[in-house]
Image (cartoon, rainbow over all chains, first blue to last red):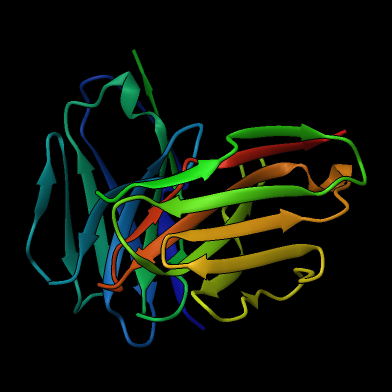
Length: 110
Length: 115
């Protein structure tokens, strides 16, 4: 059965800290790994990763995939209170629905 | 990223009525749309997968006669909650996957409250 495991489940940091969120997976026919940010509404798309070792970057957020070790990390530098959210990792096997992890709840305090 | 809209964003209805939620992909053709529900502070729960022009595939435990899904075109899917009851109150979110097959974008969600 396909599985995505995120860690930690929750995290509290102070503004300015750097955080690393982890996502490991076991899926057949891996095609891509996606990161989403969910605040009070529906998830918003952050990154899609398909190749190992290529970092994707957007402002203070970056992510990288290791297909050999079957994991991905999402880094957030210089965190701000607006980064507080649940970060979801999901894996795509193509035609089947995304398999989601349970998410990491990040709280950034001033 | 691509844009997916949902309408309405919030609905309050009486028990026993039916509610229709629309999901549209605004700037791409969605071959597949997914419907999720989410309870407060809980994970997304996939309800069904719909492909344009064919019947939806429902996840185990989801009543297909209660949650009617129609994917009439490559840009529109609808979810109708029939004879809604208070336990159907939840946050319903659709997502759409385009022809490229990898990226999947979420609509903003619809909060349903059944009194």
